[in-house]
Image (cartoon, rainbow, N blue to C red; front, side):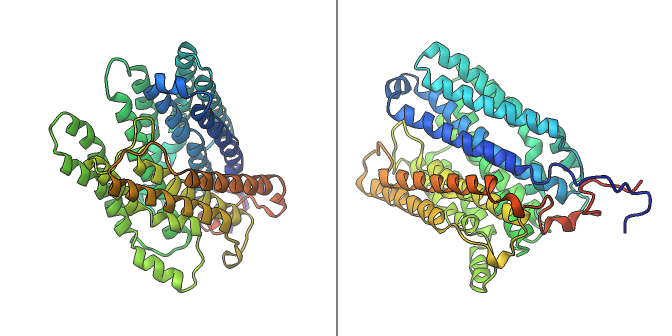
Length: 442
């Protein structure tokens, strides 16, 4: 019990549940991203083709370091101080992060829709700099978590604490790559690869393992092996990343490069033990269906990366590669929104067995991915470069997003009457649950 010297006026750590603010920011900014993308595909097609590489880079950084990072940061702000029982996420810092991130996304959207090369360069530079500065600002709380990594028997290991320490470096490299894009050919490709082919797969896998190992307590990956799995996965992703520029220089064969693109996703899929997951599901154990469904698309990311590297399947320069398309919509979309939804139900103290599945969203996302993969294999059999993704698949993704939009508007503005500051399950990590994370006896 808490001693007599404990202050009874202390309130639970404010950051618990702060995902709500960042989810709202992500929802609104996702609308802005889709508006900018739609503009590129309609009114701005000419400007897009004239400034292809720069506009592509700006849009993709807006996607990854914008609304996707908002969700990741929201999850981190909400649960990491609880898991490690520390303070370090200040309210003013979150406001700074959200302000810079949202302003950066708005600046990039304005840059793209300006239809003017000079304005685009100015606004895009401001936007990318703000996005990168926002993640650099997370250094202090990230290091607080990193220093507390051995304070409990966490079942997620470095997947939980290591990525935050990498964020400042990611922000710095992204900023410098944009500034030096005219001096070094290929630097934007490397920077984009660092975000989508290294950081994002690690972050999404961290959330998957967190859901399975920590939240569901299925112990799919033994807690003693998480460090080893993380190290091997990170090395495989790095090898895949650097193999591309090495191949372009003629130092690595195309087949070896293709194999290296495939291996990380095959490895982590095996490490997640899909047969064991299916067995757990068949036993009637509750779980989030979007998070678990995303796991089974991982081998298709690796397969698409292999085939595209070998040149068996080709897309035009104006399109995103198949493997990243599947990564974003088949995996990231489901992991981010699925994990956040489950966390939201934890805050509402909803019993795990009675949680409702968003069947329409789940079906639309996975059906859209099935259609995309069918188009991928059709492209392989026909041997022609594809110029656009299936419109039916894109429409299904759009419907899935619209249903997510409706869900979160309802949940954040209508259904918070059952919401609690400290979520169920996570309070077990706190020495003094009523006082919040980081509380110590006087």
